[in-house]
Amino acid sequence: MTSLTIETPHGPARAELHCAPEGGRAGLLIGHGAGGGVGAPDIVAASRAAAAAGVHVALVEQPYRVAGRRVPAPAHQLDTAWLTVVERLSAEWFHELPLVFGGRSSGSRVACRTSADGQAVAVLCLAFPVHPPGKPDKTRMPELDAVTVPTLVVQGQSDAFGMPGPGRHREIVVLPGDHSLKKDLPALTRAVEEWLDRILRPLD
Image (cartoon, rainbow, N blue to C red; front, side, top):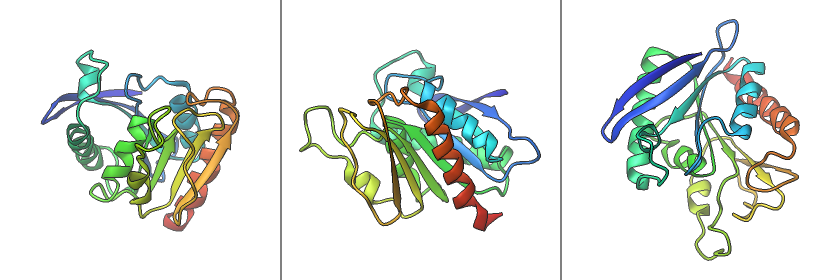
């Protein structure tokens, strides 16, 4: 594991790099939830899945978390910082490899919003927050619907943040449990590994 500090227009971000054995087929960048970190159980499980699928992983901490704050920065700042990290890692660590953007909750929204500008070949959403709890009218589905590359959404069956509907490029895996996705981590790992292996096969 290698830890890298990356300067962005909104302060330093941090990337924790985990290299897959034998070269690597792609790079998967995973962002954290609004108030959490990259050590969340579902992020760790997805990282294990990526390693098993032969994919390098970068766990990305946004500048506000690196600075010790729990309240997220505005969306445009999160997106700018994320794309700055993507550019640096693409040039120095994932040179010429296809990139998969991912994240849990708020981090999955960032991954969706930046997928086109960052030229991601796929998007992994862990517990995509369809709407704030109890406020289905405040939907974030347009962010998910705008993604034009293969997308996997892993969602808890009783997630208070809602359940996304199917879409043209979108696969949804529903697991027991809530927004934390902690109830069946082995199933999450299997789903992510199978999906990564399948969507990257044409690019190998």
